[in-house]
Image (tube, rainbow, N blue to C red):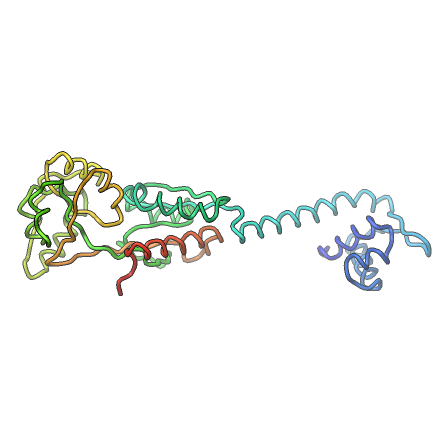
Length: 303
């Protein structure tokens, strides 16, 4: 059995108008083409749907019973096509984004708010998680997009550069570092350093030890979250390092910053998607918007 949507549309048009002439005009086809579609449909189903006379067109009993089913199929298709059009025009849709906790509470809320002002019917969901979970959530299909550093490149993920930003020294108001126009990593190492647990300090040390000054950081405190580190700095317990996209949180704590030099160390963050699956229209548009948003703030690619 090979029933086509064109055949169903022809049958519904004939049933609604009661005339091959009017149905053909409605569908913008010739009467002979319309008649051929009806015959093909009857042949595929193996039943007669329409009784034809020289003056009238009537549905057979089976045709009358089949009509609601054909109309439902046609209506479902029209709704499906309308839904696709709505998604393409961003009058509907949903975007799910996985991002590290710090980015989820600084950069993303403002970017999402700006995006939703342009596309109010798109729902954007932020999934805050550990850095190492971002790629896993993208690969599992739990989210449409992931944002994070490219620590473990994978053939299963496509990566678009989002941020390329330098480390900042972060300290409370009135701190001695605030009197310096430039702050080096050596300068920072003179004060109690609050750092993050895990790979954060070892990764920095691997880059600092390979620099001409061969600096090595020795944290006084190590905490799980940057929000905790910033609170400790605000309390005057030390200094820390951070990235510029967290400016809103630094302002909230009233902290001061200087870009760290000698050497300048940067971190790159990417927007990740599955390489075997094209993001939906809303997710693709949000990824483009977020990359442009980062560029407008001076956080995008520098090369």
